Length: 160
Image 1 (cartoon, rainbow, N blue to C red):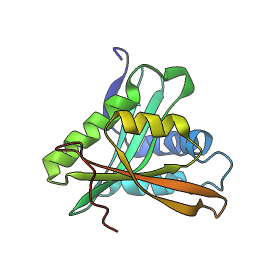
Image 2 (image 1 turned 45 degrees about the horizontal axis):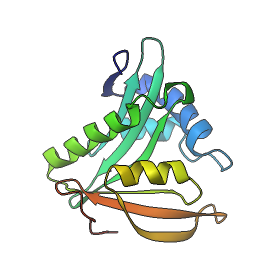
Image 3 (image 1 turned 90 degrees about the vertical axis):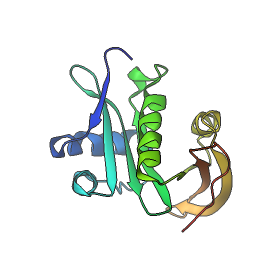
């Protein structure tokens, strides 16, 4: 990952991040993360939009929202030509360290039940399945909820 640096996203990055979300996360669904919504999270003091930037492009990004008791990973994606280089792990490590610094030790997320690669990725990081939500994605695809206590790696308590 020598040619990739992590940094908070800027408002100017919102259109590219929204496009990546459409292409890499929301494929087959109605887009629900337009540039304006990404920009809102960039400005919001209780969230972080983090980008992994190479020399000429955004190689990956992640968006996490922090609450009093839990942090929630809303989005994470790495461009196909940048995968298998540890970028997603670096994004997650940065966000988890931020959660620890903020005193928010439980991190939760949802992912498509059909995304076996993502399930394996999160499991390798210590995330455990805490439930499933039928029809979470537009009523057509189930979600798996996963969580982790970033202090210990043990199952986190799900707080809605």
